[in-house]
Image (cartoon, rainbow, N blue to C red; front, side, top):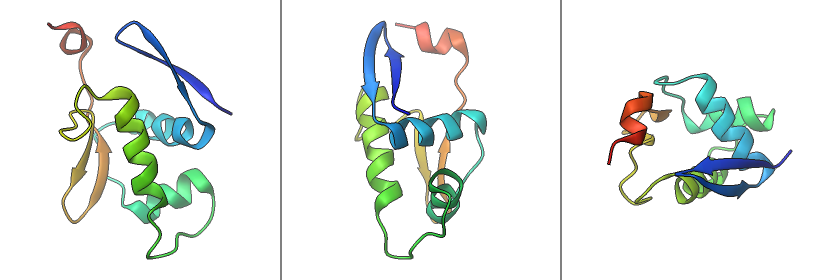
Length: 96
């Protein structure tokens, strides 16, 4: 189902699969997942090797939660390995 995110005090709507992908990453902070692993875990089926679905959804998450989506701080790419959600301490989130 679609979800609502609270980003810097603002409510941000989030389509269902974008929300499910973010939720999965939140449940596994600092763990690196390949695009194929993410696709299989969130979409529930085997990933096609040339499919950009995960990258597109990661981009959509970044547009919603990152101050600068082109320089992400929360969902980062680990070159050659995949993506991970960087665990941020609460005080870091509220710092100016």
